[in-house]
Length: 279
Ligand SMILES: *[C@@H]1O[C@H](CO)[C@@H](O)[C@H](O)[C@H]1NC(C)=O
Ligand SMILES: *[C@@H]1O[C@H](CO)[C@@H](O)[C@H](O)[C@H]1NC(C)=O
Ligand SMILES: *[C@@H]1O[C@H](CO)[C@@H](O)[C@H](O)[C@H]1NC(C)=O
Ligand SMILES: *[C@@H]1O[C@H](CO)[C@@H](O)[C@H](O)[C@H]1NC(C)=O
Ligand SMILES: *[C@@H]1O[C@H](CO)[C@@H](O)[C@H](O)[C@H]1NC(C)=O
Ligand SMILES: *[C@@H]1O[C@H](CO)[C@@H](O)[C@H](O)[C@H]1NC(C)=O
Ligand SMILES: *[C@@H]1O[C@H](CO)[C@@H](O)[C@H](O)[C@H]1NC(C)=O
Ligand SMILES: *[C@@H]1O[C@H](CO)[C@@H](O)[C@H](O)[C@H]1NC(C)=O
Ligand SMILES: *[C@@H]1O[C@H](CO)[C@@H](O)[C@H](O)[C@H]1NC(C)=O
Ligand SMILES: *[C@@H]1O[C@H](CO)[C@@H](O)[C@H](O)[C@H]1NC(C)=O
Image (cartoon, rainbow, N blue to C red; front, side, top):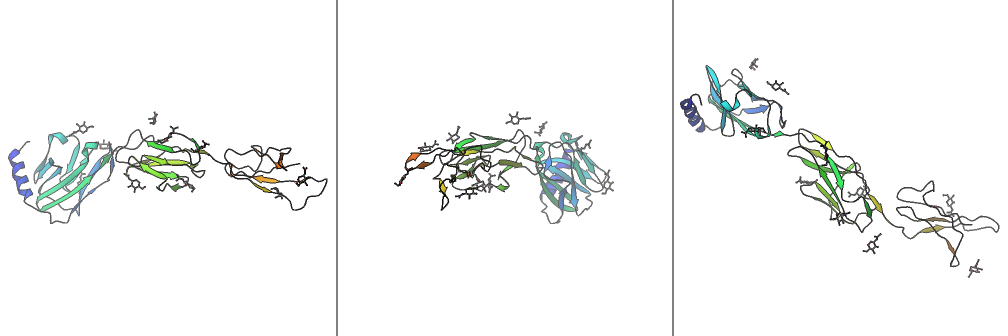
């Protein structure tokens, strides 16, 4: 240091002072992105005749009525405004995260702020270990990953609502994975993961699960009256994925069967209500 004795004297004096000033350090932004600049202001503003700005235990700048001394490790990166005591630091790195303290000996004051420097999130990717599943038989694990980013948290979406953990739905590994035990037909999604870290966020592409189920016991309806010589229509329906094919039996023997499978116009993806026209 340029004036070691001055440093030692001032720091010793300062360390006997406790904070009674009520002033706070207000950063221009916090958290901050890697590469950005920050300005630290003392609020309410008050001129400090003799004091220091420091990062953790390292002094950044020592200032006194006739000037200021910037520590060699911060030269070129910081600028200090003598009249407002404002400190600016440019091109912040992750290791600039931490406590910044301004200490005044004249007047006596101490104010602290903790800055958090973070890397923006990029490339949020979602992966499922399997997407073709059998209802109640299979377990799916969905994993969310990012290429870069720091101090982030995850949020999982199922369609437009947030995934709620339950005995069947478990979040794991710091919420980066999500397990559905015994998938059901209602677990088709689309699922997305959102990653947030205070300076940025990212959302993955959606993933849908294809859950096969059924067919369940079919329902058959028939008219109460049928007239000889006329066509009778029996409607059969059964929930299934993929859609079912139907066979009709009369007096125990198979009838001429009209297959009402994929070509049915009102056959929806999951709850397939199909008509069997039986002659
Ligand atoms: C220093 O701060 C004072 C008071 O806020 C302001 O008027 C002045 O423009 C600042 N000087 C520089 C170089 O930013
Ligand atoms: C950060 O400060 C440097 C030096 O003062 C300046 O050249 C640069 O444009 C600033 N960057 C941003 C993002 O404000
Ligand atoms: C902080 O990180 C930057 C870039 O990652 C590196 O150049 C610098 O040496 C580090 N500083 C300290 C004090 O570790
Ligand atoms: C995004 O992440 C995926 C999976 O981790 C990786 O395969 C891909 O190369 C990444 N893309 C970019 C542009 O980083
Ligand atoms: C997906 O993970 C679950 C749980 O570990 C496992 O039971 C299942 O076999 C996996 N599926 C595939 C296709 O690897
Ligand atoms: C589901 O699991 C049951 C019992 O383990 C098995 O009998 C059945 O064949 C499985 N279903 C399918 C479609 O794999
Ligand atoms: C995981 O998510 C739950 C609810 O969404 C939240 O309460 C919890 O704090 C998260 N855990 C971690 C490690 O992020
Ligand atoms: C997804 O949402 C559907 C419809 O709200 C719900 O029935 C299902 O249980 C949810 N699945 C998961 C894994 O959250
Ligand atoms: C069968 O379905 C058709 C079309 O949905 C409907 O018009 C008809 O009344 C139904 N018949 C019976 C017996 O339910
Ligand atoms: C079906 O069974 C009923 C009652 O057992 C009988 O009266 C009828 O003749 C049978 N019809 C045909 C087409 O086999």
